Structure formats: structure tokens, C-alpha cells
Length: 144
Ligand code: RB5
Image (tube, rainbow, N blue to C red; front, side, top):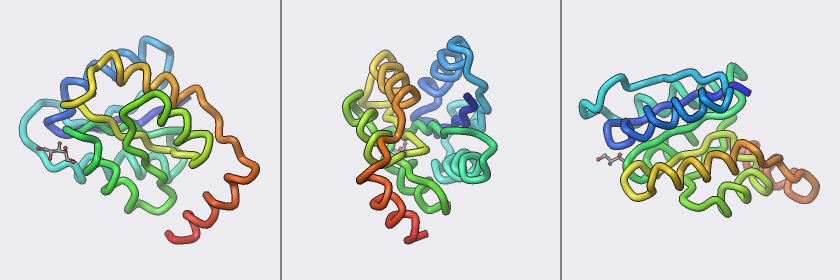
């Protein structure tokens, strides 16, 4: 499975650790930066990751900022993207099962790395439920 990942300065440390975590689990990871914890603007990193997903270059996108909120707002502006800001494993499962989320955004400041690893595990291993959820997701996508 291919994953594109990015962060801002507030998510940089966890992004680095999550790249190692995902590579260690055998995922094919594209790191869209940044390469240091110098102050940056999160939309500049959300868009390349979201574009990788929208283009079909990867299966999922992972974005980390202070809260995950700004990353979700920016990524969702890219046509084809359904980004979800997730802080619990339960919501990670539901954003895949019900919403077919293709980008997950994480908090590097308010959620511990070990918790984000569990959240990512759940996100990446949960399938879309389809059925009654499919038409709702289609209605979301018709808004692009
Ligand atoms: C950066 O200070 C912070 O605003 C950013 O990382 C993120 O939390 C925005 O949603």
C-alpha cells in the first residue's frame, strides 16, 4: 500500500516518527516534507499530499499539524479528497467505514505518538462499508 505523508513544523517530529513506523510496517511511503521543524504554512504541505491521493499516485494521505484541523481544511479543498481530522481509533474506523476517508489528519501537539500509531493502524486496516453509506459519499463528492 502506498502512502503520502506531510506535516508542518508543529507536526514535524511526529511525521518523522510516523514515516519510520510506516516504512517499518512495509508501507511504500512518499514524504512530502518538510525536512526540518522550521516554521512553515500547513496548506503548502497539505496540497501536495492531497494531490498525490487525488491523482491516484498513492492509496492514502497522512497529514500532521498542531491539531490536524488546518490540514483537514486545506486537504478537503482538493477535488477528490475526503479528509478527516482524527483523535481516537474509534473515529479512525468510522471515517473509513462510513465516509471512505482517503486522507487522515493528525494532531502532533495534543495526541501522543503511540496513540497516533494506533489511530493510523486502524485507519489503514479498515475498509469502506459501502451499502447505505455509498450514496452519501457520492453526494459529498458531487459538491467538488
Ligand atoms: C501552527 O501553529 C498551527 O496553527 C498548525 O500546526 C495547526 O494546528 C493548524 O490547524
